[in-house]
View 1 (cartoon, one colour):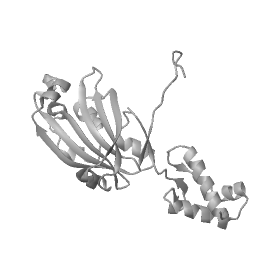
View 2: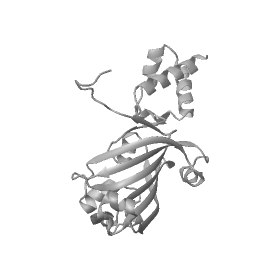
View 3: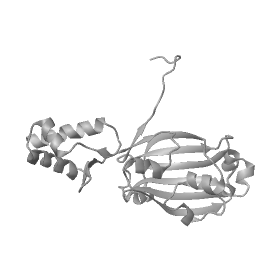
View 4: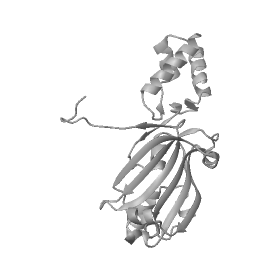
Amino acid sequence: MVRYEEIARQLEVELEVGGAAARTIASEHELCRRYGVSRTTIRAALKRLAAQGLIERQQGKGTFYRPPHIAKHLGSIVDFHTEAIEAGRVPSTKVVSLVMRPATAGEIALFGSGISHGGIAELIRVRSLDARPAVLQRSYLGRRILGRANAADLENRSLYRYLAERRGITIATIEETLEPCRANASEAARLGIANGTAVFRSHRVARDGGAQVIEVSDNLIRGDIYRFKVHRRIGDGDHH
């Protein structure tokens, strides 16, 4: 293996171990000293990483690691846009459709008659990172909960933030179930992937502080963009 390729591989491993967060990497001078090679060799290694899309070099600012995946914490209430910005990505949300319809029997049982009596809002959005479709999200919530919001009100913004700021409704808990599946032709087209591509399907139930179901969502998540993490504190009663 050529020396610059070896250095590029070592840097790639170090960056991956450091976690899926965008950050500044060492300067060319520091890397030359660390590996005992010329600046030409270091630049060749960095050029290789840039070609892989792992780093971005900004004139006058430095070189930044761009992780290939975003680490998503299961059950997190952090909204998509905030999560993306923290990972150094540019988020965007496109509303595909917003339809108001009567509630089904199952939705009446889930949301309760008080909320579902006014009908259900069915919201479909595509969430993108750096203009690349990443999540196809279908949300269901009571029309009374959403109020008079239209598609434009939910473009490029967090639904939960909208509910908090405009409707005074705060999400307190999230339940999330994750399973593998394959995107059908329609879903794949919206995600910009091939028909039948393996994706993650996330089913989420969001409740307010009084345990009232506010939103149920079905999300198709590209596995080539996201990785999932679970944080758990081991208690005295846990056994390995």
